[in-house]
Image (tube, rainbow, N blue to C red; front, side, top):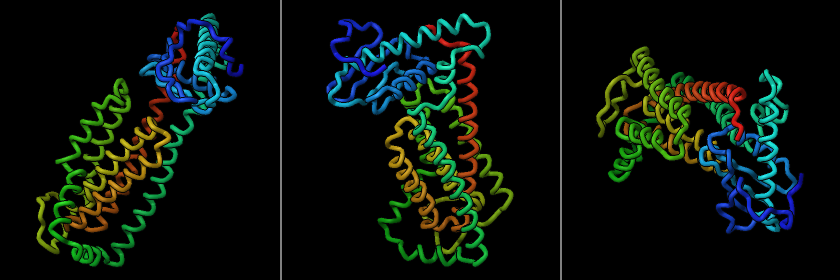
Length: 338
């Protein structure tokens, strides 16, 4: 199709309205029919990504907006005209599909837009694949470390080495950090996540997050009861703790909660994926270290907590993706006509 020139544009464009065009080569549009239509979102991203000169596309079916990056010498009006032509094509395809009695006879271009992975979605789905791959590698590493630490009896020597770092200021810092992985901080983090405007109308993500969190709590309790390991008592604690030591609940819960939040944020902001995962890893590592610094867990407790949390996180993300694909495939029978 190609990007049309400015002189080809209609004076009025009832289907596409420019919202932000102040930055050259970048514009956001309100597209009629995009709101609450994930099928149209996929189609629009697929078609725009295939157009010559289009550098990036990000459509949002919750707001009805689409962000397009294009060469700076192109006019935002030309992009608006291009989007309008795609809207017309989509509606024609839908009208044709409604004449078919079987869902399998939907035109290939529409079914591809619904079921196939588009160029825009690749970095989003890539976040999940990378997280699962890295998590699987990390799980194996953590399990190996847990076994080696226990086999060579390094738990006590590591804690005694960490004790030498104690200062009054660092004590306060570590108490604050450890609260982010326990009952004092995690409930507020979970509430903020579930009620965030970013996840408005994203019931499946919120439900999966709830299942992941509650499931991790139950799994950690069962593991603690099963192993019944006593906590270290090498020095006096400055915080109150209870229950058994293995595996660390703070390590496991922080891995699941912050890991799932990072996964969803990486989908929402794919170009900040590395920064999101890096900050999340640092936070989770800091929480685990705080448990060692405070002397309430053995190193093997923390390593095992991370491993168990990662395994459960992988299961939850995999289940979430299956649920999303199942819901998306059902939209074939209920495609909007505009």
